[in-house]
Length: 118
Image 1 (cartoon, rainbow, N blue to C red):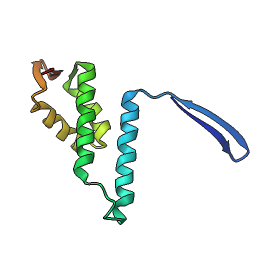
Image 2: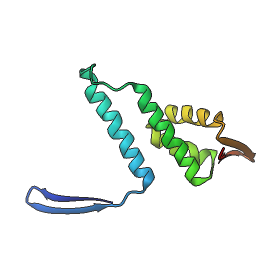
Image 3: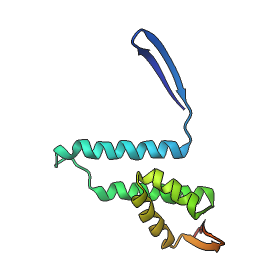
């Protein structure tokens, strides 16, 4: 839960926003991406892009692990939101398909992605 209090002009504001783990993860990704862009003026302080990609990959794996299984279209929708674009979501989907922790089963029109504990 996030609470925002203050004023907008002369009007008092008291706003409560409820967020689940997925919402917090998306916010963290967006803030991390923003800080990488804002720090690009200072190359000595810039973080390598691979660490951002690894963070997104870890969150994507946690998403499937926590749910246990998801249909392909549902997983792709979640990954697109997490990664920030359709192309990045599809790259995560391919990586997920080839992960040793994921089993993909065909069910009619859409594949089903299952998390496999090892």
